[in-house]
Image 1 (tube, rainbow, N blue to C red):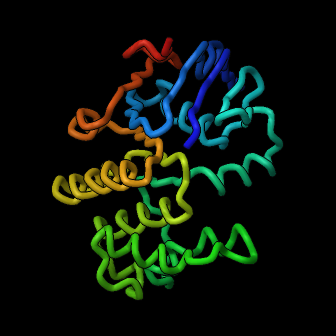
Image 2 (cartoon, rainbow, N blue to C red; image 1 turned 90 degrees about the vertical axis):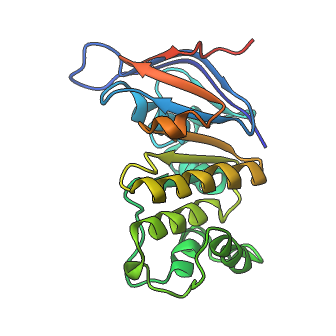
Length: 227
């Protein structure tokens, strides 16, 4: 697995006087589990979007190992993200009318005309691992907690080096949220995947290795630089 490193990053958006995000230096070790916290408008989502290649970076560099993803074209960033990044979103983004298994397999089927050998078996294994006993069940018949479990399985199906979860427990009750948090931590540890979680859930934050708290586009807690 590879590390992430940000250097001299500044993101500015039209209509704003101050940078939306300013990160002189940030290094994340391979396999590290990191919480990203901050109030609405603090730069939390911008940081996550930069680290996953969703935002184009015009000033600064974002290294995945030796690859500067900030220097890639949009098409190549999309290809990099499909290969290396798993995403778990608050609203699941599952497709009704498809089974849990087909939802897990869909990104692989869309990203390449010939999915990797064994991907279906891996998808079934992950669904079993997250507690879905009926992989052929339509997702619209699942509970919200079950839907998020499917989303976790989908994010890990391609064995990404980076797993990013954006408020993964926010729309769940306490019990379902705790179960999803357990899965994110356990499965990322088993796979050796770097885990980044943007969250307001203090129980989840307390279980991660490190916290990056943002205010006014700057990381304030703890010091973001490793020496």
